[in-house]
Image 1 (tube, rainbow over the protein chains, first blue to last red):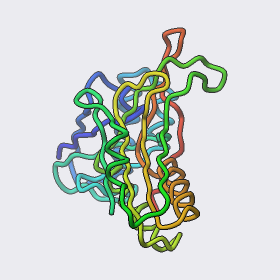
Image 2 (image 1 turned 180 degrees about the horizontal axis):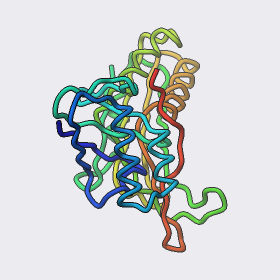
Image 3 (image 1 turned 180 degrees about the vertical axis):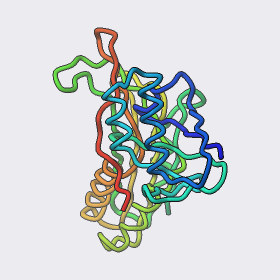
Length: 89
Length: 148
């Protein structure tokens, strides 16, 4: 399964692109996605602690624009957005 | 009556006259237009401008929820509300958000305007990257969104 992770706010510093791609071999959850992003930061961003903190405190949003919990099952290829802590307006 | 929009500054400008036009009605005796603008200082740092990012669909959804909640929480049924927020680079003194409300009476208009901006701050997925005089820039920390 392929997950396209759309980056917003501070998470845009994770990549030059607005989207990161992750592959999963079996049914996975948001909790697994969170771990994969942390692994990506370890491998590609020298384990940047600030970036990891962003991942730990972020929410995630499904393709149909609902905030989803860590237990949300990813059962097909889809786009998911990472929603870092907010502070606009 | 509700109008919401994210204004992508790379494509268009935010226009205060649109807000005034939208809420104008002889049904209402009180109108308030709130502008959020970029100020020159934040936490003792000299700010040159702010880049706003937003999850457009979630932001619009949050604006609609906040508008609908006002019925129950503030008991304001008769109202006109205009909310636009920008995304992209905003210079000093320029507008990042317009909230225009019109209600039959002034107490309702003040309550509603304040309620909307406070809820947007808490709930709408909008992010700010401040640009400083010394050429550095950083995303502001913000608060985690509620996942229920």
